[in-house]
Structures are given as C-alpha cells and as structure tokens.
Image 1 (cartoon, rainbow, N blue to C red):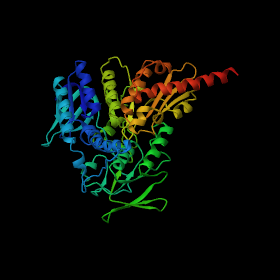
Image 2 (image 1 turned 180 degrees about the horizontal axis):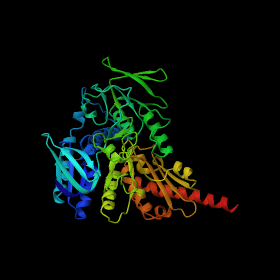
Image 3 (image 1 turned 45 degrees about the vertical axis):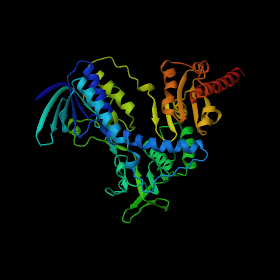
Length: 468
C-alpha cells in the first residue's frame, strides 16, 4: 500500500491546483485520473473547445457589428464544427503540456485508473488491466467534476441531440438549433450559433435567463439575443422529444412544437460522485450528486475534501482553482486566506458578461442600502467605433461611504475589463477611485470613470434627500 500526504481524485482545475498547492507545502501527492488525458472536462470537452468555437463566432460578430462597407461574409456550405474549431487541437496540446510540466515540476505522482474510497484515508484504484492498487493519505481531495444533466423526457443516444461535451461531434452546422436551458452554457452556445448564422430557439423553464447575473444585465442580454435573431421562450417546459424523423421535434407544455436539425441540452449539471463509495462513508451529497462542504471545502467526514464542479452547481474554472487551494491549505493547517468573496466570474456570451460582488437583487434581499452608477457603451467613443452599442457597466456602492459593493459588465471584452473593478473592491476602495483615474482615450476602460461620475451624481441627490 502506497502512502502519501494527499490523494487528489481528478486532474481538472480544482484537482491540479490542489495538488500543486500541497506540493508547494512540501507534501507528497498522488493524483488519480481515469481519463486518457489530464485536465478534466474544462480542457478536454468544455472550456477550451467551446471558447475555440466562440473565437470564430466572435470574429464574425465583430465584423458584422462594425459594418465594414463593401465586405460581405458567408460561411462555406457544409462547413462543420471541426472546420471552425481547427485551432482546438493545438490549444489542447499546449494545455496538456502545461499541466504535465507543472505536475512533473512538483513531483506529483499520477496514478491512472478509476478511484473508489475505502475509507476517509484510503483510495482503491482500478487500473486499465483490471488490477487494483490501494493508496493511503492524511487527506483526500475529491475533484471529479460534473456532467450534463439530461432531463428524463429528452432521449439519450441521438447523434443530433447533444450536450456541451458532445457538441464537437455535431458535424455540419445545422440550419435550425434548439437550445434547452438559459443558464451559462445555454446562453453561451445560443449566442455563438446565432453569430454563425444558425436559426436558434432558446427554451428556458424559468422566467428569466442567467439567474446568477444581475437582472438588469440579463434582460439587456436577452434583448440583444433577440436582436440577433434568437427566439427566446421563457416559462416553458419541454414535455417530450420526437427523434424518429430526420429532424427533431420538441413538444412544449403550451402545445407548440419546435422542429430543428439539432439540439443542445444545457439543463444543468450533476456531480460526478457515482461509484466513489461516498454513501458507505456517510458523506453528505445532495439530490443532484453535489458533495456538501463547509467554508474550507471539507465534507461531513473529517479529512475528506471536495472542490470544483463536484462541490458547486456553478461550473467556473476560476472558482474551482481557488476552492482546491483553500481545501489543501486547510487540510494541512496552513493559513487560509479565501479569495472567494471577491472572485470575478464571466459568461462568454457575445457580448461577454462579467461581474464581481453583490447584485441589486442581493442588496435588496440583505436589506443593504445601495446606489448605482451606470455607463453605456453607446455613449462611449470606443463602443461607438467597434459597434458595441448595447452594453452597460453598473457600479453598485454604499451610499454611506461610497464603498464599492458590486461591478457588473455587459460589453465586448467584459471578462478582461472586470479586473479593474475587482482590484478596487479587493482594496476596499470607493467610487472616487474611478473618478480620480485617467484612462486612455478612446477605451472601454473609461466606462469606469463615466459610471463613477454617474454614481456620484446619484450620491449627491441621495445626500440632498437625507438633509430634507
């Protein structure tokens, strides 16, 4: 039986980051991976493939919105996703190399095979040849990720009925695509395919898109999708799917039938916890298979931790990496300085959405007073130049001391621009930090100054009302 300080199950963002953090603390680490390639779903079937597709879609969207005179765009007939995502393999190989070099540098041992917990400190690995090997450690980190949830009324196995992990197998671009689910994955792909000229219908069970996003931005993005030709259907369950014909037919509860060439199911995620043996150990797992953890990512069983998609319903690589770091530091008694409170999140739609801190809805739910400063891309020269005329920056701040509470962006490059607001929030800064900063001209970064001045005007009005 091999002895380690830490056993990590899964090599995605949470697992790799956790393993590296333990090695930096001087610990002996084993990383168990069942897949042929390291990196988890984020690199192999999720983030990298989808963002490669997005780059082509973004390129087409940029040229169209800039309105280049005399330039007409048309995709080749019969173009496949594989053609569009030609850069994927190059990026994948580069990322695999980075992960392998990091693991080698920290002398992390990779154990190939399927892991199952024997107890809180023992992992049995079934290898490809059927043999098993037992590993023991002071702590175990579960980083097994999640999988796409498939509603029972949607049949499995049809080659044109896909989820985010199988989308690359689609083949030729469809004429009509139905997307089931208006969360992060569903909206990202709806925007991408619309930019590629596909007729897209987005069906969402709830009353709004993107529940994790500030409601004002989510509504503005919905209008943008509709302007791009996407039909958005809210409050509408899918009752059944007929896959017996060449085309798929989705029957909605209202009685409407949607016919399409292909469909993407993005109706949520389930934790990859089956066959890990968690039930026998009494590990708390919810109805969707997500492991329940405390603020330090420890499960209900001491010494057993979980991080990343297996421990959260919202799959963001940045969150996963920080959770892996926190779990390992807590496991070995190192100081835990969680950065999750001010972690930026991004939705890679077209245009992008990014945010950090509180939304207006969260402030209201907490009974926290707040004010808002806004700036719009159609009133920003850079926004006008690039044709991004529907975007907005919202700065949510306290009326008492103008401390920044939340930053919310909908615009081209939002995932990069959010870090300006993030740094001010991390420093405990106030609205004045943006108003007193000189930005290059013309830039979208200057939206921060515009929003700050708008917020200061709102603050002056608030002060006047308080004095009455």
